[in-house]
Image (cartoon, rainbow, N blue to C red; front, top):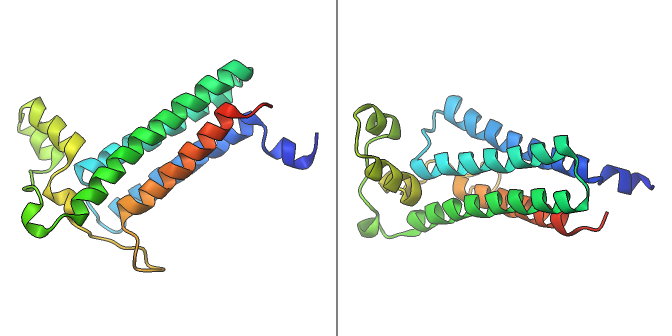
Length: 171
């Protein structure tokens, strides 16, 4: 087996996917704690699906299954990444709306939970976002162009591609 083939063994690829997801969560926590950027409901859902993608890949790395199992783990992790990208796309859509079309801001999720808002209202905020999701509070420092959900979408796209490749590969 060549060095490249050893480097791309299914177990290692799953570990790379897990590490990428862990890095994305680390960056999100840094932005929340150090940069004091409060995550909106759609940001939270994107985190959930970065974690889900990473955990499926980690399970695949630990299990290290044969061909059929490798395909199952690849498809499941790709599905998690695709769902996560849907939340990123929804947030990008909200950020592109004209100011008069932006939905009203809801209270924070923690307040809604503590004040025992109806679950339907909490879930609506999580799945569709609100006005806080439309705010652009940060742009990348290098190009001053990309927003957080745009970078998350790029991350999800790379993850989905790696997961699909993992699912479809022969070795």
